[in-house]
Length: 319
DNA sequence: AATGGTGACAACCGCTCGACT
DNA sequence: TAGTCGAGCGGTTGTCACCAT
Figure 1: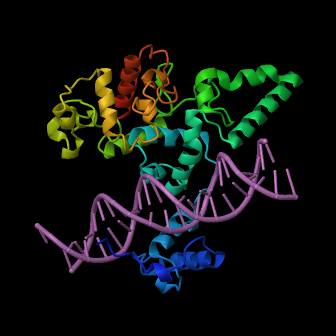
Figure 2: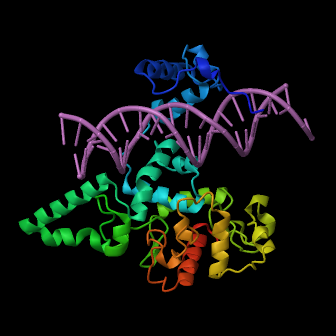
Figure 3: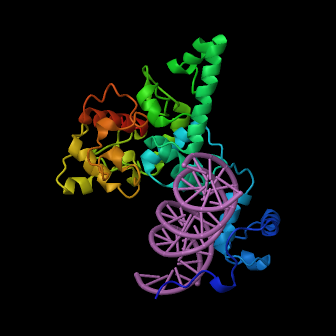
């Protein structure tokens, strides 16, 4: 016996919404609100739609101040940064991006960002890149070559204004600043990162690093005193310790791999970052520098792991 | 011009969680 | 305390437009 359906599927319309339905729903909610009951709402306004469908339509499409498409580089970085930290918790990620919906971000991740990250270009990106190439060639032939070649390349002028391919950047060019990454002794995007850090902390240090064995960790904000901490602030290391992994702030490779294993579900799709994908040869030393930008540190797999761990702990206020 | 492949996006489905009784 | 219900969430699917061949 399964659960009773939320509505009578037979008498409910499915598929794309018509402009009339949109208008009905929008004007009603704008005037009366949802009334806290989505299930009853379609009956009230005479829509042959499931309440869940109405809610989704409103949240993802009709709600005011919704932004569609055209994700900026800044948004890309925030999404990426959060995905790596907390996994596919789209609603939380969306909360950090005003005007974006979880559905939008989820779609964007699945269709664009993931491919960007793994180096598989979409046709659109290929076209954009060809366009860029063409533009640069044109500029060069106009005697503007020097301006085109410098500019963003030294990172002094902020982010490039054009779309680029993460994977190719990793190999051929300078790495774009990611919030939280350390460049020339200072952290990039601290203003963005601060809110993300707070969010992550609120989630209980969520993310691949949340289960890392950091025994008796006390966040700095509580003055180093465990007695001042709320109960939720302790880092649960029991699962790891039960498995025979001893706590250590400088983690050997095995420990980190095990830690990531616990987050396999949430990190699905980024498996290869954590050395547990189908391609077992993919290890930390091969991680896209977007994730762990300081390639010079990663002279070995373990070096990369430790670097990333240290930086992430810093992000979470753990250092 | 026709056709098959691919990408983007909207919408649906089923599960979990929390509020309420 | 257990059961029920609705809201919210993430994964998946369907559909349409665009592009390459």
